Length: 382
Image 1 (cartoon, helix red, strand yellow):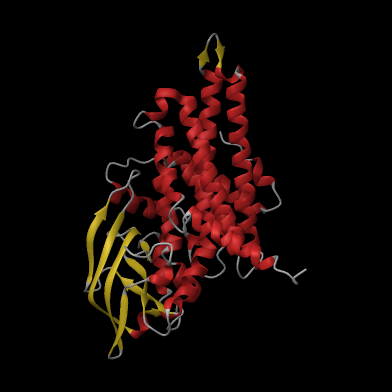
Image 2: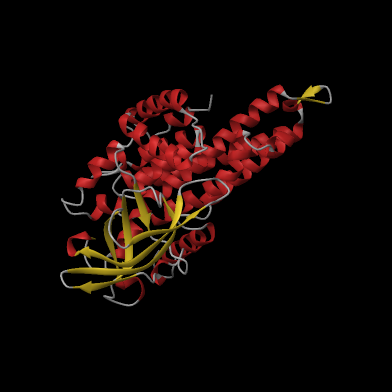
């Protein structure tokens, strides 16, 4: 059983502790799932999470980031694909929740019930971290838009029912000329050009747009607001990536503590060896430090901060990078079992790596943090 004493920290309220308790009970019954058919499993997970009510907070007004983080941490600790399925319902509809029209927000009822899957279509072959370099073009065409271009590494690509798509509309150079659109998956001109396989299988795809026509009402927000919308969505959900990493790290620590208590070496348990104790101490320290950063960022956003770019960047950077180290130590402590296919520690090792890349790679988070620190400490500001 994982340590849950962090739930008594002042970041949380009684409703958060109740949520954690209910979700843990659900996870004990329902997870992990068979990943042989990733698409089918992901679709079913969304359905089941929706029926259980755990998707309610992923969309709509007043998103509670602490709840999202608690759910992602708990799901990741039990099953990485369950975390993925949950996360995309929020990220994929974030633009609609924050900037959508009343008509567009009708999609949210379906995504919260688990009846529709959502996707966030931002990255392109030439522009991942540098959003301002998007090439996908949305040109005015009568009373609507004609879109041509390509997206890649799109989570839920190929199984999503609705995409939030970012494209260049040309109101200004770079980031000033982007807009956001709501695209149902059955829109003519939207193509699934390639399904992408990674070291930890998730539903990913490369999307193409060939003279895809959208009505003007498909635009989310105003023309030229696309960059602002994308950054606002990431500001809300970036902390939750750190929470997922925290869940992976906490599971790795749990497995390592169990291994140390029950494995004998040279006539004593692993837990009696000072070197092993040193590894376990570092792992526990990294887990708690990551939790503090993640839930600080979530709490700050929930308390009404307009932007938590710095806090979210710190949470994601530290939690994902340190989780990688925690899991690597767990592999080492498990010896041959740690690299045996199908072992939980081996699966954690594959799961964690992508989190240091998506929704802003670790190096990009360092740039964000440094720029924030420089801006806050420039001469004459004290």
